[in-house]
Amino acid sequence: MTPPRLMLVCGEPSGDQLGAQLMMALRNLDPQVEISGVGGEAMTAQGLSSLFSLSDTAVMGLREVVPKIPRILARVNEAVDFAVRTQPDAVVLIDSPDFTHRIARKLKRRAPKIATVNYVAPQVWASRAYRARAMARYFDLLLALLPFEAQFFQSYGLKTVFVGHPVIERAARMQGGPELRERLGIPPDACLLCVLPGSRSNEVRLLLPVFRDAVALLQQRTRNLYCVLPTIPHVAEQVRRGVSYWPTPLTILDREDDKFSAFSAANAALAASGTVTTELALARTPLVVGYKLGWLTYKMARPFIHAPFATLVNILLGREAVPERIQEQCTPEALVDALSPLLEEGPTRARQIADLGEACHKLGEGSLAPSYRAAQSLLDFVGAHKT
Picture (spheres, rainbow, N blue to C red):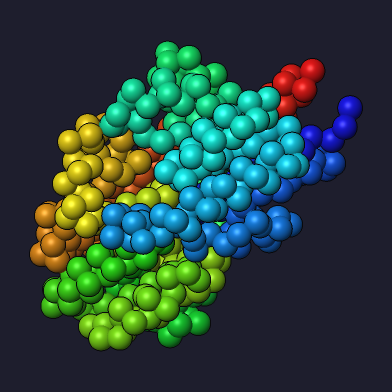
């Protein structure tokens, strides 16, 4: 039998990380597998020659998306054309549903025999559940990250396999905190806050000013406060402009390994909602989540959102273990009131650390690596589909 030929497509940095882990697992299980598609730095480091840069597709919010619609649609067409031309055994669409699902729909119309696989389901169980039935028409398989998703999507006719959340495989990288403090000149007894305003330009634009003002207030309550701010290339310049008047000593970190060391080093974190909150949970770093959308985007989206929480830890536990301050509640004062008890030893901090551990266990921490489960499920599916 000929080696499996897969096309992997992601649309933003968090999907790029998952794609890189999946590529590594696929090659360990079948060294002959051929992989093409779209990815970022992490997938490129695994040997992918990306069709185009993620800077065109890693956007969110009406203000940022609307001007880029022609470019995004062009990239959708480019990916579909490539798949039709190269005829892979399966196209694996990773996260970023506003981008990747367009590819899946268009590909199913043009080349229905090419198998389509969704890796990381959109949270349609939280809003617009009817989309699950539509997904069953243009996806042949879903690799689900959350335990309750398999039954939900299968009830709509979409073949689904629960593989676990690959983010838990990064647990071993959450180390090097003391060494990072020493390298940056941060005293061991200083209070270190990790600030994470998001990986999208629109997130940085809306959240960084609020986080900066929160740090200014926190400095008045906390002795010897330092900050670190991990960032990624396509928003790094925007971040640097936004921190020109930061109220405390601040170091911007560009390297991924330094980001994980920062999680290990920090007393607590102030973070945008997203994959990074699960990474912080793995590091057992107490956190507060702040998030804002543009007012028009939020007004249009709000009627469709039915989930009680935005953070995965809280969704898994069914309660607000991690404080969430969303939209109008995302103010400097509210963020600081939630952060302050987490910066010192006490029942609030201890309780959240225990809750983070419980949530990580539910995601599959301590069992077979999810990316390997996903890779094996994908290879089994491709083998059966080819037969």
